[in-house]
Each structure stands twice: as structure tokens, then as C-alpha cells.
Image (cartoon, one colour):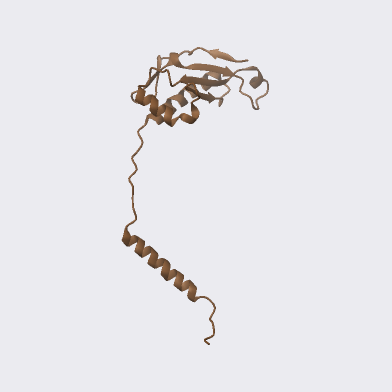
Length: 153
């Protein structure tokens, strides 16, 4: 019992995925399957689990640099043909699962395209190294002096 779904009843013909990215709803492929897990007859009879498929390689929503960034940052989630798959089975409602999957796609793409902060390299100064090593030497000496007392020969 697998069903391919049309884009549903969207208010807008696209999904906002960040400040400058709009994914056309026509590019999204929704697929409904039985959810599995506990739930009795309802879960066995109704296809409420939603798989959302979006092809990163052929989308018109991304420029080439953005496409490269998304492919790089979401590489573990994109298959060999460029399809990104998102699954939602949180709710017993197919509509709520479809909305959840769409929101996850939007958040995922927005997070992938968010610029990364540049790391400021830091270095321990020579004076700090000297102080640390001197403290280690003092501590080591104190521990060494706690050992057994040997008779003087």
C-alpha cells in the first residue's frame, strides 16, 4: 500500500528555505506508506508515514555554488542520483506528517546554506607554557618527597 501524492493543497507554490531560497512545490515528491510500529488496526490500514523526495541536482531553486554547498553539507543524506529523502511518521495524520516533512526540508536546506563562522585560531603563549611546566615540576617534587624515607648510608 504505497501511494504517490500530488503536492497537496499549498497556499503558495513554493517553500521558503532561508532568506533567498524558494523551493518550488512542483519539485517535491511525496510518498505515503504504512507507518509501522504500535497502533493496532489504524497503523496497519492507513498510509500515514510520509517520505518527501527532493532532487538537489536538478532543482531550479539553487544556484551552482549553493547546490555545491548543499551537496557537501548534506552528503550523507543525498543518494547517488542527487535525491534528498526526508521521512515523517510522528503523527497519525498524513496531512500533519506531510507538513512536518516539508518543514524539516525547509529547516535542513536553510541550515546547510547558513554561512559557517570562521574559527579564530588561538595559541598558548610561551610565558603560559613556562608557568604551567613550572607548576607541574613543583607538584611532581612535592609528590616525590612524600615517598618513603630511606636511611642514610
